[in-house]
Length: 396
Image 1 (cartoon, rainbow, N blue to C red):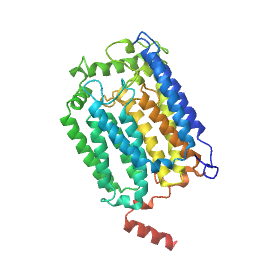
Image 2: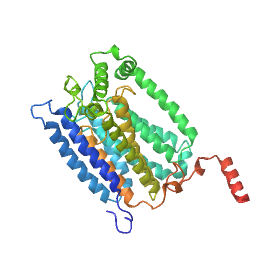
Image 3: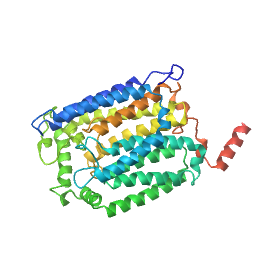
Image 4: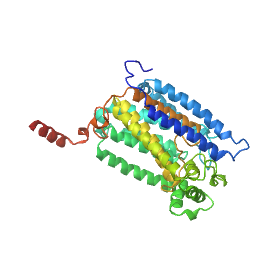
């Protein structure tokens, strides 16, 4: 655990309060979206509440632990993640032709993979230092590792989770000091890979087609998207009231997982949606502050990666529920029903709080923008530009 010598600051209580508010709101919305599905109206609420208690307990434990322990456990956690992703392909179950979970969806290895991968990438990037700019030490092994993890997830298939992992990892790779040219190469290669996946994946290609033409599948995914949009329109400014939504009652789709934002929109209205967005913006702000103030590269990258994971996932969920992106199965962190998602997200918050306890007291602006830890803007400059900048400072 953190000692008095290392724990120099209190945990970020503002961040903790926002997380607790989201969890409470999530329990309310899960109950509202599911009370009519089973004879036991509180069935899903009770299960989610149990996972919430477990997740909050994990949050408290991880907030007390020295976050450096995760650097030592990065490889075992990543290995365990690989094994769980392979196991779910062999033994798992799912809906709609997927194999992505155990125990009726409560245990999803891909959720554990998100957290394990963030930890491993943070440890790996921190160990590379300036070598990250070398293609043979940085971009190539990074791409191989990322491709292997996302490949296992795409086999389930789970395109949404794969995209989230890629987006989070690329953001961490760039912040760690990778050259912009490497980023462009990675984006081109990633775009080509995504195009190949969509072309060769029947379900992904169909969802893209439905996105541009909702009438092409009026009885399937197109119907679900139109239902989500109808719920948002019906909510208006203030909503119909908690528990008063009607779109969630129309079978065959359930709205407590991938489309819970539409339930929020119908019952709490535009104001409720804006509150949710505002809470996630606050999480992004506090997460970046914690990352700015981290005392070492690993803490910086870990805090940044966890923050990107939460914010990117929320953005995708909200975009899908507003038909801004093609439909994909991505939960809203801390709010949607799902034991693995809730516990892993709360565990990630615990790591953020642990890092916040040892952060350096300094104004965020004293560190160069998006240059964390001991880095500044200079590493991103070419050698010639760095030499000219040094000569200019010497002349002064």
